[in-house]
Length: 405
Figure 1 (spheres, rainbow, N blue to C red):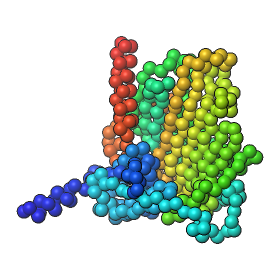
Figure 2: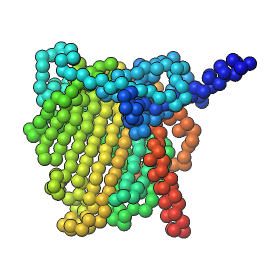
Figure 3: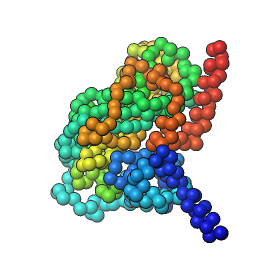
Figure 4: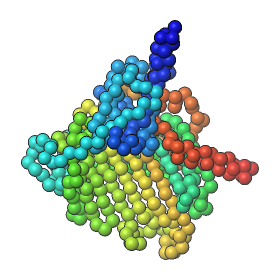
């Protein structure tokens, strides 16, 4: 009886909970040497486009179809050796330790002659047609919008959406189907906001795409200077890490696949220097003083698709176009996590209905919360910090509604 009970306990201690033909895996990803949490690690089913991402605390929750339980789960991050685990081998809240692996140029087999950093980027730019989809496709994704004014958080909004894209080089934003809103907490903002229309969070994200709109550090503009910093492992391949600078305001880090010359990840930062601004002030008194964009891609069926996107800004809000009176500073942060890719050959079996009004903010699209939709939806779970922010905003929203009665 004791042995039977022990077996029973071990069997059900696994976080493999079949709900509506889904299995849920939970865990934490850390650095093998330091034990520090690894944020934004890719977790996906091998040979599929189904995946999720660890949060900034390294924690993840991954829902996979029961019928795919025999597929391997791949955990990967640039600069680390990937790990493959069978779902049946997962323990509840398992800790997965990734080993860092720094390579030197001499350790890498490069088929072409030795290229300079600028030549590598030029070759990657010339290889866009080879690496990115030339047919329409769909992406499923999760959007998180977090807003702060000065030191006070004023908004947390989360939603699920589908994105219908044309081929990669068609220079317009995708059509969007807003599927569901999970969190929608907005409290009192500075009175300045009442005079200006709030921008749609999703549209604000999808209009910034260096590859689709053909601009930024991938084009090797006249002022950009580049150098190879290192070569890193990434998901059974190797990538160049190239650092670029365009003085005085811009810098970028580009990760480029050694074999295909695909842009795997792009990090771009632009900031004011010594009170000198790279962009003139807008007529409503807004002055952007910092802009950070991250784009990461994943390979599926021989092409590279968006995996993760983050846009983080800092805006100084002045009383007017010519005024030097600073009203407040706002810090919008928007993220898009892609959890599924649907290629053209799969689209015919996949329902899509564009319903997003780009002239309306997401909260004005919101419908009643649907817990069944979110039960097995792959999205990064809230961190401890975000949970505290959520509770603060929830209470602040209640207080605002009470004051308005």
